[in-house]
Picture 1 (cartoon, rainbow, N blue to C red):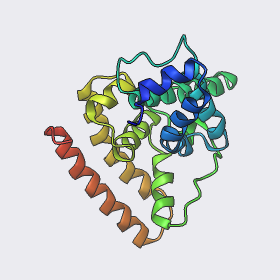
Picture 2 (cartoon, rainbow, N blue to C red):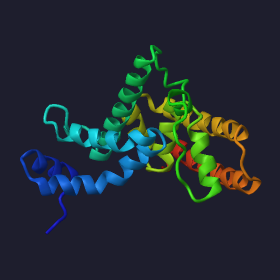
Picture 3 (cartoon, one colour):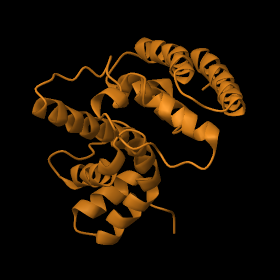
Length: 208
């Protein structure tokens, strides 16, 4: 029996098939957790649940206008931005995600638990660059979204996606320079950034 695709699982879930809903959540849960873990700290679990509640809502759910995974990350982005807009409203400050980082929006947010020093350095540097750019980098390099998929998720032109990716690498290097870390961890992350640059060049030429 063929494995049902995402749209079939969504339809079955909305029709009351809990097993279909569970299968859908299990298929995409790890990616949504990764999306929030570097951006929401202790609020991540709650925001993950909010994403799947939106998916289950017949009035706001998947309409098949993109791949389900692209739609899902779009919902995750909207949930995250709403979360931070709520926080900044409470502080009587307007959020500007093109400028403000997680470090700015949530001072004191606990760092990501990571066993390796280079991973800790990368996570902390990501949290110090503008949130819009952090999302773009992580979705491209960690979740393997294409340029067109990113444009759909982030609701921006493809050219802007490419600009954010190029700018993001430079901003990460600047952020790393402000963080105390072992030299071997810095070198490991620089190698990773070089690999990312090669991926970006391939994507710019239509190879990704």
